[in-house]
Image (cartoon, rainbow, N blue to C red; front, side, top):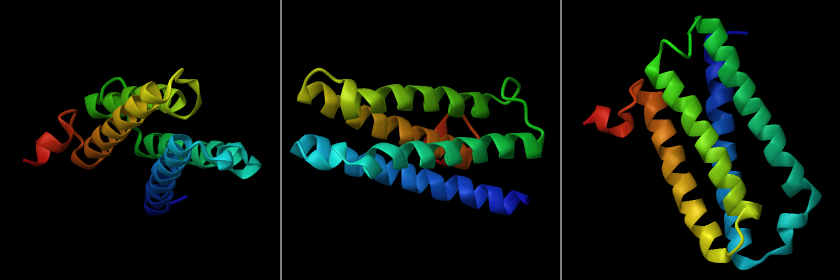
Length: 129
């Protein structure tokens, strides 16, 4: 598989995953029963799996080592933080206020990860300045 195709799959999955997360978070804030719909519960796992596998394939294709590329380690660390915050935001937060706070924090982490991906720097968006 070509680099460009993998990169486009990875970036497309990134857009889908954050869009879905925002939509599910809105539904959480509204108390919508759409959160319990089968598609709503399954689709994020499929999208996130494609996202992660495309990222791993890119790392492998480019011969990158996560432990020698600080920006890549920052992306993976940020991904773990984003996942934890996302699960708190959508279903594990004990109160609505904690869920909303986790949602905002998860968005900030996703923005950081996106900046790292584009700048190839742990400074994320600051590196563009």
